Image (tube, rainbow, N blue to C red; front, side, top):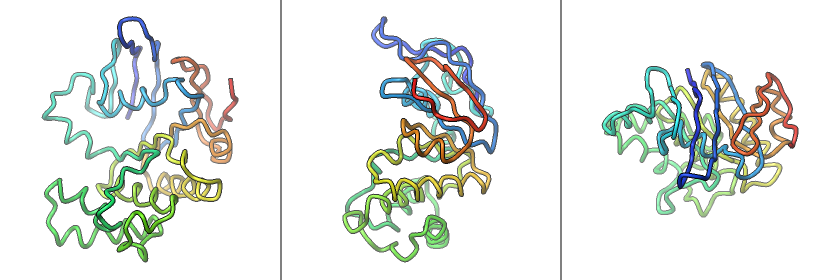
Length: 227
């Protein structure tokens, strides 16, 4: 499904942030990309979603070679990806329902379909009863659940989560991780970027460890060993 082939990324001609990355991720996997700050995790994800292009190498997602895509092809690619960030990126003047619905509205879905899909996905993340609340009425964990619902409403084949628990306490962190595992068991590939050894080791899935822009360890059911 996903392949990084001899990928390097250099900024400004001399600042190497990724070096000779070779990585394959199969459909349905749950993969944690781990490492300290500046290890290269976020840059790796930016290459996958097409926000950045590699200096060298190929980034492949299904039938797409992302680094060679035309701009007109990106909407089709992005509809197959759900993306969750540390800071939620919710629209403050819209309710939970409206935040999730907005992702469908901009894509031209009919209102009847939106009215059917949004409660379903909010139910999956445990927020059906909070769908009319606004972000400032929700806890940090609830905000992240809305963000996950928004990412999942298109039924993407892959969910990309970049430090999704960075702003949450331990209880909410554990709940969000349980939700990501649940989504994975429903068939969605999950890629999690984090520096939190607690959550990675609790999941017990594949762990890819990065140090200074390189992959130094790749283990099935691995542990995050801080390098």
